[in-house]
Image (cartoon, rainbow, N blue to C red; front, side, top):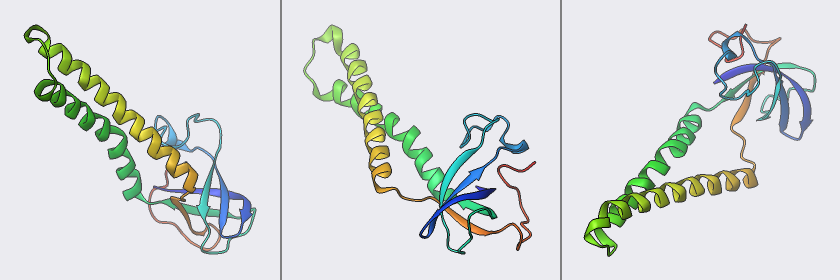
Length: 150
């Protein structure tokens, strides 16, 4: 994902970029929850851009895909594991075997969500940066689609 914004703060090799929504943001909600307000992102500033400059930034797509897989797939995998644990290994009366398997599937789903939440807290604690400044708007002609273009 590539976008354009203005640097509003700088600290070492990190900057805060104010990103205003554009025409491509309508209905997207990937990063900007409210399509009428700006959002501030933190990015690595390898080009030494200064406060007030308009810059292009990029978020690595492999991380976006990886996090999406984690959020959507891990709870489902845990639900299936929970179902099979309840169906195959837990002692149960004959009349309740399907009910117990469904209950353990729900427990597995909850555990999957808690694992995702724990991983998210761990990432926030590390303050890993997924965005990077790729150029100044005044110096480069960007050819491609910007997430907040228009």
